[in-house]
Image (tube, rainbow, N blue to C red; front, side, top):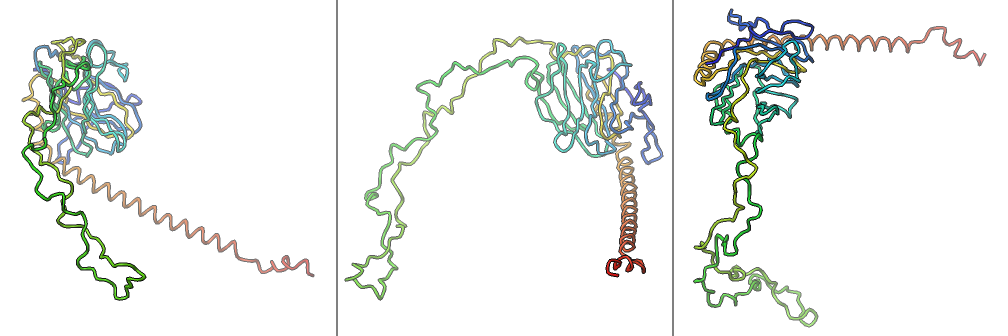
Length: 380
């Protein structure tokens, strides 16, 4: 079955040796232990050893929840699964891992979900562009990997993406490649429509002129044929003219479709029936850099039962979603009030400084009553 790793169970240190888990108020009188990053512009690394888990011949389910209490600006919100021996005191960005899952945000351009798997010591990111959630509520990220190498990625129990390790990662060479030596057969007919051989040109079709004299035109009253020549009405497009005659088009009975380069077996492809198998998982780790802290991790789960993982998400939202929304809205009210108060203080302080500058300016422009003695000294 695997096991659930609660945020409060992870051991490790944040910056300056401080623990990074804390008690998070939900606004309904309840408090739950979670892991939270506190200090801005810091690198965080924390890990927990778990009972060894192997996904050989069974489904792997990895799930956790994340809440971004602040606009993260630039930083990660992912977790890692680690295999083999890990010196937890030295756990960091260079520590090898078997799986990375979760959001990575930087500015307005990068808002992605990392899904990186390790195979034979090399890391392979998913080729698809997966968008993460960026609001300030809790969201669950779930990765399911099956023995047939198919996978599903869920966000809040909704399938965001699915596919296969064979096609969505460049782990193995492709099973099929295009036959670059193939050429379109000479008798391949890729014309979808052809001229109707039974269509004939209507009698008199070519005798219809493209332009005709304007029947509404009248010779000007001052037209002098001796000087101006014989008057001719101007030409206008002939509404009866239909252009050059063309045969009607009909479906081509010999149409074979657009020719495409055929696919052939890739001689460089060598299947690995254990492609889906990761090295036995022994640790769960969080290793991120964040410009703005305030990320809350919880509900970390490694198991082999997708239904169990789904139930955890449903139970969490049933218990906490409304309370979390209420707490968020209340926190937003406090934040806006504090922001308005700070803006008002800044405005008042700005006005004080402006008045002080104005007073100093007026004082500097005043003349001493005896200044005229100096002003006109040279004229005495």
